[in-house]
Length: 172
Image 1 (cartoon, helix red, strand yellow):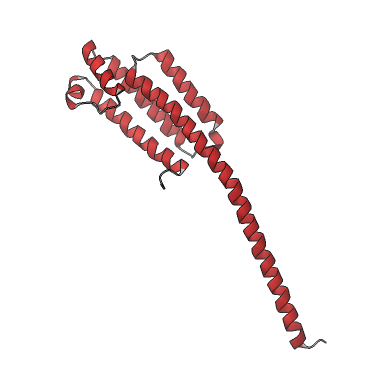
Image 2 (image 1 turned 180 degrees about the vertical axis):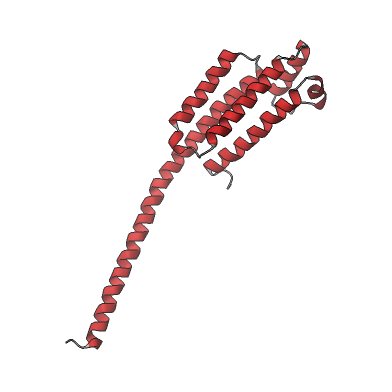
């Protein structure tokens, strides 16, 4: 039987080699995961930015033009196609937030168009086209406009916060 004092250095050397091999493997695995995650993050950021651009097209349409259901549906279709194509990259719950926002924009557009006074409709569109806040006196004159406008703005803000978090812009 070999002497314990000669086996101890060999056992310690073997255990040290195993430890170094294990740590090297873990570091390699982590680096490999980070490389993969980096490319997925870039794709995710691109998807969210593209969807945001399409949402902004709907938003601008509602704020600046007379409501046309065909045009609205065309713009919404573009948003939905992008959402479907980017589905693997989107966070759970984003689809519902986007749909709520689009519906709020539709209600806002319809509320503007339902105003009886054409000059009031034009004042509202002129103000919204400049992306300024609606003046209180305009909101008071237009029936239902305050609620529709505030609902759309609240849903927009929620979506902005969600998208900023998804692309990592909330950290900056």
